[in-house]
Image 1 (spheres, one colour):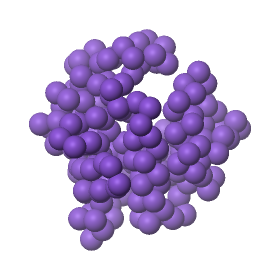
Image 2: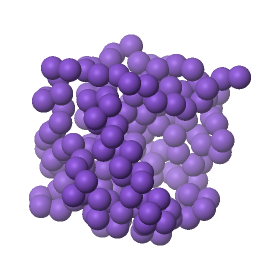
Image 3: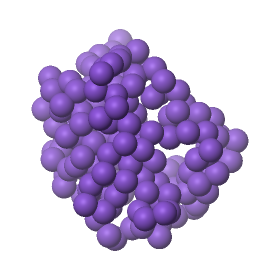
Length: 181
């Protein structure tokens, strides 16, 4: 039986300071802290950010738990999903995290932005830089993004970040996009 998703402790030591805060043309991305939980729970609880999730929006308690996992991911791996800021506003999270997928070490690419930020290319901007970071930290690992088949916007972000559709990797109702698989 193949392991489809899991976590492993991987650290990258001295490169941490270079990736804890990332700045692109319009965005600032930084390591999350528990003080960010309210902003992220509001985004993750919005029904519009969960249109493609079969069960709808998670409960606030589930969102708090997930956000805690994102914070712990940084503690375990020295890299993870960043808080995405535009100006003074938190507009979501995006980044990469080490995971096992089909028994292979890889980078999981994640992005979820507030509906108020949609349509501005912010997700692509953040995702492209996340792929760059992943490639610099562990270039032999593929980058993988999973999305529901009806989430065309998320699929476009993955493709614009340099991933390609890999139907042979689809799993549990998710379409898979990958780079260097």
